[in-house]
Amino acid sequence: MNDADVLRRLSQLGIELPPPPQALAAYVPVRVVGGLAFVAGQVPMIDGEVMHPGHLGDDISIEQGAEAARRAAVQALSALRGSLGSFDPIEALAQVSVFVAATADFTRHPAVANGASELLVEVLGDEGTHARAAVGVASLPLGASVEVAVTAALR
Image (cartoon, helix red, strand yellow):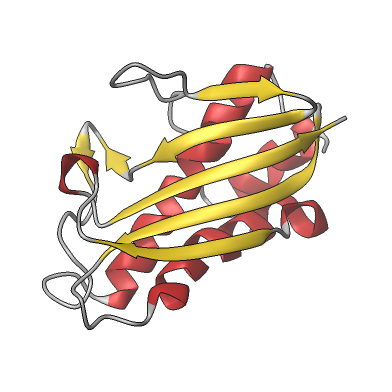
């Protein structure tokens, strides 16, 4: 990926990368191993507050969940760029895992996860296509409704 091209595309979409996330516990935001960059799970944050906290199927709509997943994906991009110094070392995304805090009867996890997946393809083009898991969970850190983890292949 070309760093300038990715930044230009973000700008065209009206997206400003937030500062790279800092670890909130005993982990690192990005770990590079064997030609892969693993981004720790990102919960959607704006100005230090969780975006759309709660549970899908209860107090959070699918649209809000998708918006939260989109924000978490932007944060994952910021983490990658912050750790690698630019987007240049990234060959392509490999895997995206989206965790959705949901009620037991909620089944629309893929619709929520599309918020992250569609953003990544919008920004990165073909290199942003990826395998994906969309998983429902009982709760997430800080009461978040969504958490997104990304794995990128490096050159």
